Amino acid sequence: MAENQENITQAASGTEAPKSAVSRAHRSEKVGTVSSDKMQKTVIVRVDRLVLHPKYRRYVRRTSKFMAHDDLGSTTGDRVRIVETRPLSANKRWRVVEIVQKAAK
Image 1 (cartoon, helix red, strand yellow):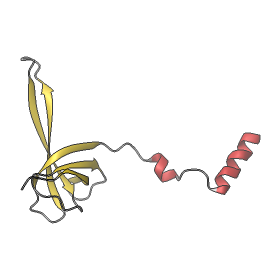
Image 2 (cartoon, helix red, strand yellow):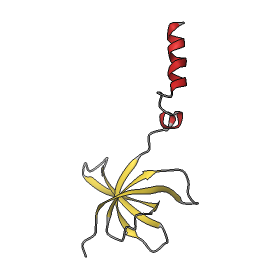
Image 3 (cartoon, helix red, strand yellow):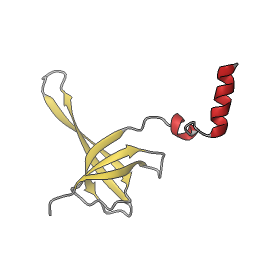
């Protein structure tokens, strides 16, 4: 009974974290290179990963391309960090969070 009363007083005083921040799922992050910036506020990010070949036991580079929303103004060749987000268009489900390294000019 005393614990329940304590929880009620904490909720009334507002010391608890908001429910939206607590219930949010983990958003996956990837780091890749911008391969195209020809659209408005959208970039295509190329993410490379190394996969062990099952037969030859050598590492093979696999590439995935993601369309990401870009408010930061990244250009072709920049290394960027992208995070998963809600669907923004038919193909866009990622958002550019930071420019890790600018491209050499």
